[in-house]
Length: 209
Image (cartoon, rainbow, N blue to C red; front, side, top):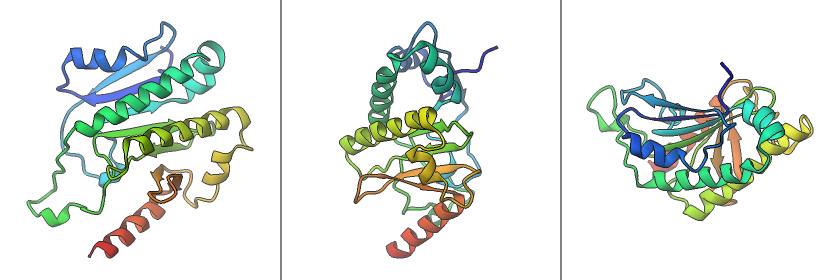
């Protein structure tokens, strides 16, 4: 079986009609879209490392196969689809559970959406998770998606001399998962490996005390 171009993770309890509504605008006869219904169960991990309630994964096969050979007109459709689902996700309320009843275990400094996340594979196999700050406006989210899509497309057409690769090469642990955060001041993407991400959250928590 061929590898999917796009994977959509969605909560197990979502009704079929809602799933059809989400996927109808992205459908193409040559596009391999896989929908995973994920059980709503506690996950033992750091909040920002867990995929969003609705998580979209754009695989290498989309840019390396589908887009380059079959679906060049599909690119703008994909960008619009991602933006719409990102903005819709803002109405979803997600409750964070902890291992104990202590609310102090919840990282209140984390303003990134738990309802939506966007995931990409670079041409050289790096995993990037994009996070979306709920304190930023819809327009910022949409513009940021547009900017990253241009970066990842260039990554597949101009690697290793592309802008995204130059940004990621500075990460010491860049072979592991990479996290993209929208800088609230510049509105530009900043990228962190797991160690730098942990340091970032630590510094934010210190300021909030």
